[in-house]
Length: 159
Image 1 (cartoon, rainbow, N blue to C red):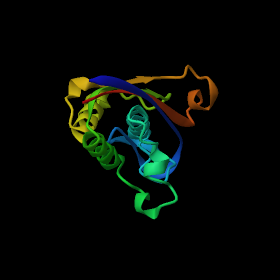
Image 2 (cartoon, rainbow, N blue to C red):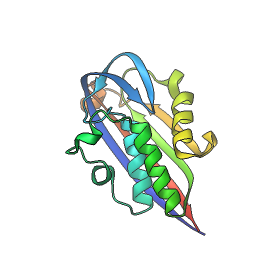
Image 3 (cartoon, rainbow, N blue to C red):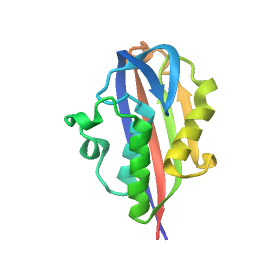
Image 4 (cartoon, rainbow, N blue to C red):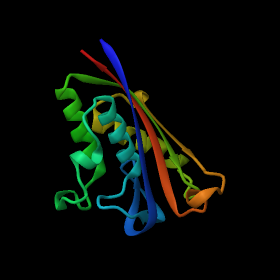
């Protein structure tokens, strides 16, 4: 068996009428992210990390924002589709680690639900999914509270 690692990144600005969704969890009392799909930057970064590890392209290739089928798409379902493609390619997800960077809202009470949603979508144990949240210490547009950035790393094994 060999292992592969991929890195994912996503960013979106706040300002949508849609709800704020991260890791499949709706965060109340905050404006949503401007995006073609539901704007779930956490799922998007994880999708890119997984696809990168498997050398299967990226989220924009698989689910282009020019295709109306993906308008307001549920990103957890997109993540599940990537999980199915990895399985079909004989890859096994070893772990996923993601960091959400934003000033507000605070996310600690939502982390376990995010991890559970991601693990379920990918068919892995919750222990194989890590999600953390950090602020950007008031630096740049994210630090000014105008958006969110997510970094993700995924490790795959193959057989």
